[in-house]
Structure formats: C-alpha cells, structure tokens
Length: 456
Image (cartoon, rainbow, N blue to C red):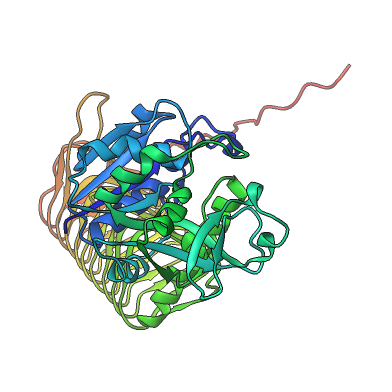
C-alpha cells in the first residue's frame, strides 16, 4: 500500500494571541508545520496533504516549492471534518497516516513503529500514558484489554476521567475505511464537532482490529496551543539536541543554555560556553572553542579555532587555528586562512585574509584581498563604497598597515610595503615602499586655550 500523510493545520490558535497562524510558530528556528512535513518525508510518505483554513495563504507561502497537496477546511467543524477535506484526492487503496501541524516533535521512529502495526484491515492508534491526562481523550478498553472507544474529556464520565492512557490523535487507517466511516460521523457532542476519534467505535462495530502503539516520550505528542506550551517544547527539543552534541564529543558549559536553530555538526573535543546560538548549517572542527554569548550562522570553523565571547559569525569559512574576538563580527563572504587573528570590535565582509595575518583592533575590512603575514593596525578601514558601487582593496604579503589608516578603494598595496599611521591612501603602493599620506604637523607657540565666560 502507498502511504498518504494528512497533516491537519487549519486551526486559528486563538490562545497564541497572534496574527501568525498557529502552525507557523517556530521550534528551533523552524515552523511547527515544517517539522511535521519533514518527518513525513523521513518516513517515506508517497504524498503529503495539508488541510488548511485560518491563514491559508501564509501557510502555503511558508512551504512554497514543496511537493504538497492542499485541502481547504473553510469552516472548522472538527478533526473528522478536516480529514474528510483531503480524502477525495487520496487513492482508496492507500494507507493514511494522520498527523497534526501543531504537534512538531513526533519522531520518525515512533511513527515507523506505529505503521509496522498497521495493515489494510486494521486501525492503528498512537497512545501515551500521562500522569495528568486532563484535556485529552481517554482510551477506553474492555475486559479483554481491547480498545473499544475514545472518549473526549468533555464527554467523559467521572470513572473514564481516571484513565491515564490517552489519545494522541495520531492514527493510521486505510483510505477505504475512512471513506466508509467519515460520512457516518455525528456532531452530537459537547463541542458540536465531527470527532475523528468516533471512528474507533465504528471500527469495533465493524469488527476491524484496533492496534495500539505507544509514543516513546510524552513530549513527542505534546501540542502547542499557547506560547507557554511552545516554550516548553522548545526547551525539550533543545535539550535533546544538546544531548546529541555531547554524545558526538562536544562539551557544553551548560546544556540548558544553548540554542540550535538549524544543523550543527561538531568534531571531537569541541567546547561551547553558555548562551550561544547556532543558525542554519554550522560545522565546528575538532578542538574548536566557542566563548559565551556567540552567534554563529551558516559558517564552517575548522579545527582548533578559538571564538571569543560576544562574537557574531555569519556566512564565513575559517581555516584551522584562527582566533576571533571578543566582540568581533565576521559577515558573509569572509574567508580566513590558517592562524588568522581577528580582534575585538573588528568587522569583516567579503574579505579573504591570508595565513597568520592580524586585524587586531577596531577595524573594518570589506571587499578586500589580504595576503599572509599582514599586520593591520587599529582603526583601519577599507573605504569600499562610493554610495553606488563597491570597490576592492588588495594588500600583498608582509605588509604593515599603520593605525588609523583609510584605504580608499580601488587600491593595491605591494609586498612588504609599510603605511604610516593616520594615512589616507588613495593610490597604489609598490612593493617595499613606505607610504605616508597625512597633513604636516604644525606646532603653534603662544596659543591660548579658549576659556569659559564667567557666569552672570
């Protein structure tokens, strides 16, 4: 049988108190809905269907380019009604797996275990045991421990409310059975909705076997209806990612104070201090040390680099044994060779800097090609922008750039050249030359400093 995954994502999420559709709120930098779409792909779904309603255009836009089949639930009449909107485009000989766009942490392993229990003539349910099951539909079993019904919280008797095995809403059933059962759903309940869970009683009446699988952890099936619940899911997920990092050989100063919003790969003996944020695709080589309060985005940092506190690195590639920061900012297009030093309050952008060169203090290096063993003094800037176009600065090997130098691009500085402090360089400098471009100093004798006028 082919597998069609139906993801319910039509709800407004009024308790979020947000103009953003609930399913687009993020966990680890990715929408809850995208988490669910990704897990559907991971388990090998042949087709993914998303039932949309509130904020439909925004939801579709968030997954532009994905191979998704969309179904509109114009009126929110319950989960059974929602699934029915997708059913007409699902082949009758397919198996349907029903997921939820606001339950983002369901694992592929749990879903695969559920699907292993399923076949054409069964209804497979995913349940979980909760110490405090308030708000969830209870799994009702007979004297032989067979599932005979799911009773929603508002419809349950006092005895049924004591049951701790609850429905997660996730189930798998053939499209053929759904076509038989969904038209028979009734809305005669406390909510006045068409409950998908009522098909359990129909399965019992039709002598269809009901198979049960259990979630590995309650947080896998926890939905997010409020910002508080969203935050709980975020912290649980980040804790899980932190455990994976430590298993790979990274040391974390505090596993509760790290945020990974993408894919972070680490080598052995990596150390990450507190309050660091990683976004996009980040690779840290063996022996890399990340100081506190750093933000690293889409970057590759090779072995034995040291990133000191409060540094921001985005779209950069660092070769081995570089030292960055504190308070450095490496912008996209920065490429550093081995043993480069970028110091405090230095900003780089589209800068290719050669081996063992140093930009240690309070400088801006943009659109620049710098050779090896170059020393760039404090306060140096490459003047790369004339208000319309960007221009390049080229500095060859073994050059010494004095403090407070402005290099007005386009400009080329030859090998072994020296630039005097305080210079404004507007022309090329040949190999080995000394360039000094500053006004001549004048000392005025007898000059009197201005004095404040006495107050009346």
